[in-house]
Amino acid sequence: MTATEVSLSNKRILVTGGAGFLGRRLIQQLCQAGADLSKITVPRSRDSDLRTLDNCQRVVDQQDVVIHLAAHVGGIGLNREKPAELFYDNLIMGAQLIQAAYQAGVEKFVCVGTICAYPKFTPVPFKEDDLWNGYPEETNAAYGIAKKALLVQLQSYRQQYGFDGIYLLPVNLYGPEDNFDPRSSHVIPALIHKVHEAQQRGDSSIPVWGDGSPTREFLYSDDAARGIVMGTQFYSSPEPVNLGTGSEISIKDLITLICELMEFEGEIVWETDKPNGQPRRCLDTERARQAFGFVAEVGFREGLQKTIAWYRQHS
Image 1 (cartoon, rainbow, N blue to C red):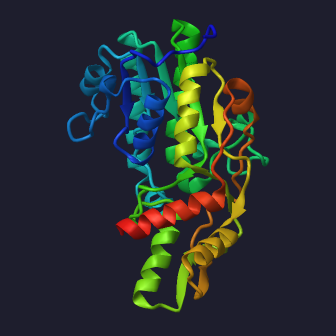
Image 2: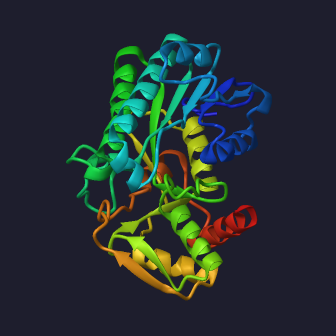
């Protein structure tokens, strides 16, 4: 074991958001890496609202490792509708949890951030050193800035207190068990749901926000969970780390591929009065590879097929 390696065996691990889409995958990956399932705690928001300091202090008590996944998050629609809630909820949850974990003597804090924190016009591929070189894309700036503030907090606590906190930046996630609610889902589950509903109704077309030109990068949920576990075990530095594939696809090509895999032959109607969001998103993933050996394994077409199959089975 290297000087910075964290052995997960016999560690008491708190996973906020552990009952969610990514959290369930993360717990599986933790156990595969040697963690004891009986020592993993998953606080539920109905019992432990992390916007309340007392709850943060209670859930981190006696924990060795905290992995903070919990977030109030959604697609462009939710970001436009509730920016104040997204800013406050994400900032206050994270800030209080980090403070409580430091005071409780937690050995390792892993904060999962968002690439919404990157500037709107970041050179592609996004390098971690560009994180502060501009203002985020306006529709998700409140969420992105709130999450980015937690990076500053962790860096400050490391500098002043020697607190071992790391900050990981996964790109857009997708996979089975994702949120397919069209009111709050991200682009892949939203499009899969939209195509499925059109097929059920026998529609000859589907509407899609924007003009199809923006590009996005997507990381399969199992890969993301594995990357977070590897960071937890093998990374201990103040610099943020991207988790992604290093490949991008346009929204136009994405919906075309989804229609192909779902065998939908109708017309795509672009709603150009709706926002596109950030023009391009594609990460430089070299730091993760060099720092702790993370490389994505699941191909995009394969991941989409698995996601569509799960949705059709459970819709």
